[in-house]
Image 1 (spheres, rainbow, N blue to C red):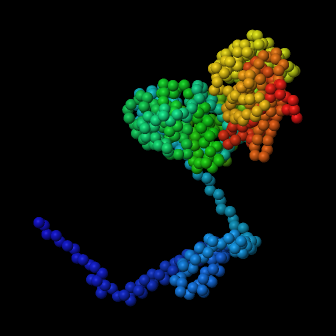
Image 2 (cartoon, rainbow, N blue to C red):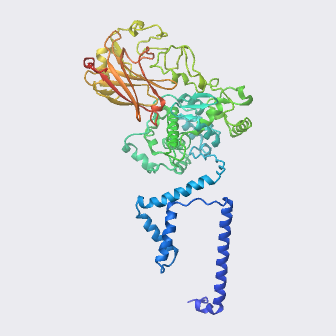
Image 3 (tube, one colour):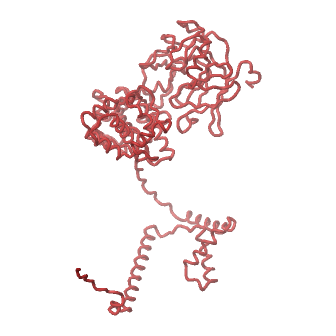
Length: 615
């Protein structure tokens, strides 16, 4: 057994004779004096730096000074200031407001004297707010660098191949902050360089290369449908870990699991990031069927999420800015020309493939030399961007428009359309057509008084069409009610005559279908857009030669303010892309809620119950 060698045990009794207690006390006293001197010196310097005028004390300080003085006199046995201060704190907590008023008044008087005698301080230069965002194009680029050819092909198969050409690695945060200050979330537009440039899914398609057509992306549904996927991706209430997804994408597999992991990763880090670090597990709802992913309208989803996240940030609900800020950055570069760059080169679609770090650095240098952002000229028309203004101002299906010109960007001070006839035409909409009738001549309502006198239908005037764009039903008016009740029972709002019905129109909704419970008649609540707000009116679906009109009332409220319209419906054979002039309620944008929704109260009266209603 090895010998154990113990170290010397220097306990306190062994070394105490070596230390002189008087010297120890002297050294301790010197250290305290030095510390006290340094503290007082620091206080004097701080006071001198602040100008030598201390800020007035609050009411509690005035009370505590008086209390501690009396307490120390009446309690000589007290052990010090700490006990007296504790007693003062306990006494202050149980005092009533009336008892504290004496000290509050004294503090207010001292504060007023301080303000009147102290010169105003020079305001410190305000530092630029830091932009906190989870949008990280560089992180996505690093991940995609490691993709195999099969994985890249899988990315192209789901409609996201444009992201493989992403070359921009960093966000220019100063530019993003500048753009966010000028981003109108209600109108979905950028107000820069004296112009209002509306943003649309088509712009997202041109800049980011994502499809701007197809089915809407719905990221909600029963939790049990995605329970297995939540387990697969370790989804918690906070979300799905980005690092976990990076590990999944590092595997050589290129099947559905790879596609799903890639979509979650790209949505959480670039296209639709939220204020959180993790990826929202709600995205799993539209990733259950990977064969239909390419059929979604991803451009619209990106824009909707961007508007929502910026709105939440402005409301103070989150510290970070969510949404795809890279889209705003590249859209600005493409839409605003600076210096000699007005000599435009051919547009590269998608635009993200042409903006490298070197090009962006050069652009930022030119912006700085010209005095900052917004010094250029808006050229988005020439480059096919921002072409939604007339769609915004001339909402087809609601306003009386004739179709003759292309969409354009108008200066902010020239928003009045005047008497000029306008057009909104795209690949899905014929000129002023009446759905289901193939009527495609220009309609001019300037000299018309009766809608039934100006339209000659290719079919019987007793026929009507289904108001839903996705339905091709054309039949007798008497059959329309049964058709809508049977085929579209969940697409309309059922109401009772003479009873108010609260409804809400989303930002992208231009109409709602209302169906009367009593007789099944269909009505349309139509919404248009003007430069200061939305126009709202009610029409009835029925034979064009019908003289029956229904009295209705629309009410929009905001706080103590309210807007009201009482009028009669016009009868039309279906939902039309041009409506003759009629009464409408103009609701300013300020009446919309935080999500851009228009809340209304609608009441429609049966013709037999109109006695006394209009009063």
